[in-house]
Image 1 (cartoon, rainbow, N blue to C red):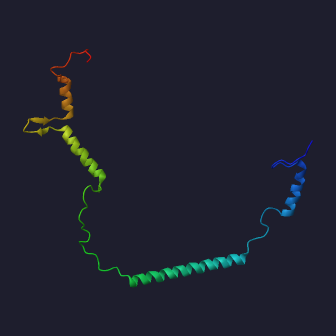
Image 2 (cartoon, rainbow, N blue to C red):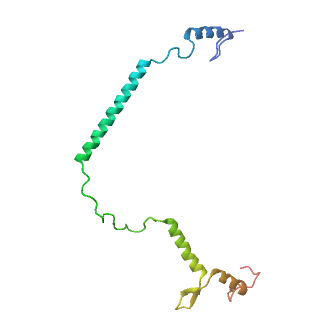
Image 3 (cartoon, rainbow, N blue to C red):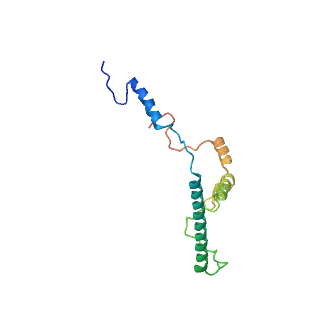
Length: 150
């Protein structure tokens, strides 16, 4: 039988060579500790950099405070601005929603004139349903008889 290597497949006798290679490479983890003097130097450098950056920001803020003044104090009337054109955003949408429903409920549940000159009144929905149940739906005078398809 022909012992040829296929892609990624090694013959079994190469396993011994793998263990020899591992022993030559090392244990596979760090064998020495981190250098303490190097870590201390890094921490000191980081601290010095932080102090220099804070000192520079404080100097920059002091410069801006002196060079760029805020100007005159605000007027008590600076708060009053003209309203923008409609439609505007709602300041209290929940309150507006409640007011809308209250006005709709008042229209639907009270008696009032819809058109006083024409003699048209508005009655509560519950009363209108009672009247409709008592009297029935209105029917057209020239309606075809029931059961006749047009």
